[in-house]
Length: 270
Image (tube, rainbow, N blue to C red; front, side):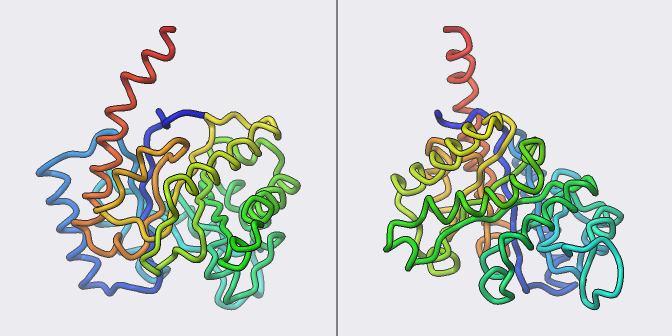
């Protein structure tokens, strides 16, 4: 595994933040930043709260894809408060987060629940972003790899290797989400390496899956993170609420991608 030559993916998770006025201001600033200094080598997306999907799909710059923060594990029926994959697709969502740690912890979502959501999202033509990560206790007990591979295995058992084709996995150490703490470079590379090793053992081509890092990624540390081996982009939380910071993070990924291109060409020429 080497420094990624894939087009980086930068996704913003707004969580339960925003308003119609705030969202309009965010879009206006993001569009201005992209017009002033285009970002050509990065795929961008944002995942706002459900009530804002309809309005944002009408005003987001074409370069920024729309995503959702969750999806139901059922197709249709008497599931009050749920939103189906087909509904998200109709709203022109491209991405949907599944298995975010906040939902696993607060709403007791199991690996099986997450796998069913992943499968339905995939079948609807969405790109599910499978969130994996360990708690502080699990980290202290040296259980990180075991926890993450178990989370991956649940999806594999339901969807098979083809379920991961053109897929996205987001590694977010739970202890680093919203805390200001970031995993060390060696920790990030080790976990991403373990994920790619798991993919290889299950005959899932490395090139077909983006593995993102999330966990207090900011404009100030993003360049160093994106330069690490096996990091194909980022799932950005709090920093994505500021359009300027979000685009700055995208620019960091853009610069990394531009540097990686000649290296990838050189490797193919050997």
